[in-house]
Length: 283
Ligand SMILES: [Zn+2]
Image 1 (cartoon, rainbow, N blue to C red):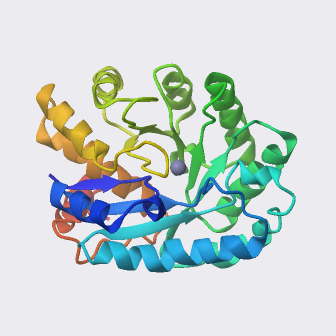
Image 2 (image 1 turned 30 degrees about the vertical axis):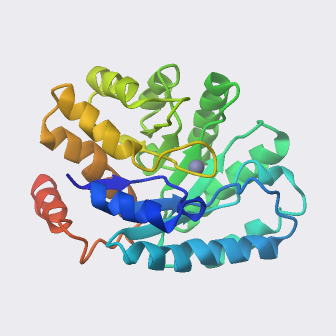
């Protein structure tokens, strides 16, 4: 089993976690820039963080044979702090870098006017830099936040096939699928979404344009919940091929749209590209 976790905050995890993930089959991860819990008070603090997730974390991951890419953005929560707003001006420099495969995570936290502005500005950056966008849906008032996010995505003019809308659940998945975006699910130990609920969603909606992640961060979370979801799929009668699609080929297809996803030398990754080139008529 090969696993690609398309949304995981490794900066919050220990090196032992990398080791456990590698042993369980995780071979690639994408780490989105996010809120660190402790408010940042100046743009320099973001510069150090961005440098860490495009430099230090890929190095740490590589020691366990895990390929690490990042997404870069001003997160929705800190979009509300005027001291952090100049981060928007730093982004173009980072969005030009090789290991950066999307703009993210962007979207809404409390749906304030400041968040509106920063969300739209960053969707425009995704268009400018020809990058996909990773959009976080708010934890409070999720249904309204999801609809409003989809409205803003539509207004921006970005191709919905280049957007992943994340942290969805049974209530919000229909609207996201109808809009044509990729649907992302974060599997957590107690809240949000469990492996068994995820299996039910896959039964109902199929495996196309679905992304499953552990989102593991500084809160109660588990970086192996992608693996647990794969096991739950197999136990529920899904084929190994379906598991590979959801937990490897889908994230590969989504982030490949950046033109920067580099899985060379990743154990077993070649099969992906051979498979995809057949599906895409050899292109
Ligand atoms: Zn996140």
